[in-house]
Image 1 (cartoon, rainbow, N blue to C red):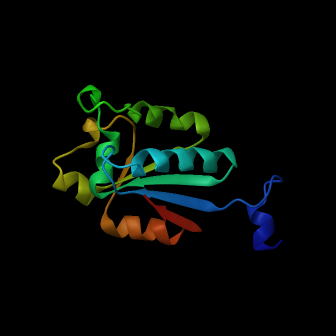
Image 2 (image 1 turned 135 degrees about the vertical axis):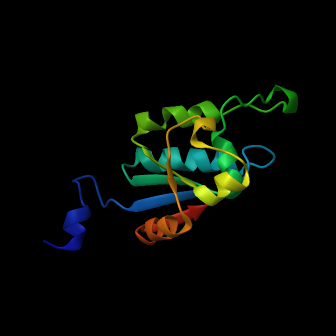
Amino acid sequence: MSEMDDMDDGSGIIKKFMFLNRKAPHGTVYALEGLEVVLITAAFDQDVSMVFTDDGVYQLIKGVDTKGIEVKDFSRTYRALEGYDIEKLYVDQKSMDARGLTEEDLIVDVTVLSVDEMANLMAEQDVVISF
């Protein structure tokens, strides 16, 4: 059996896509556009994981109130990811520490990784897309 056969589930080739979220949730389109791309990729039955690093960790903060900045709060969408079979959510420990955040501050369950663990996970991916 070839490597291609191992990746084929009958609907096409499955690739490992990692989406690296580095930007704060508001002020640019990166976070929202990135989330939309993740949902589209998952709709094509690909192996999707999401990483939150740098200011991207703010995308997962509980209790966000966007009324004052007059933008839609899309953070609740992260709670719906499991329904799209997106269950691999990772957060960079160093980014959390630098911002004084803990897992209890986040809206979803994540796996917190060290820099080395993150590098190893990235090396296993077929595609890494940064937003």
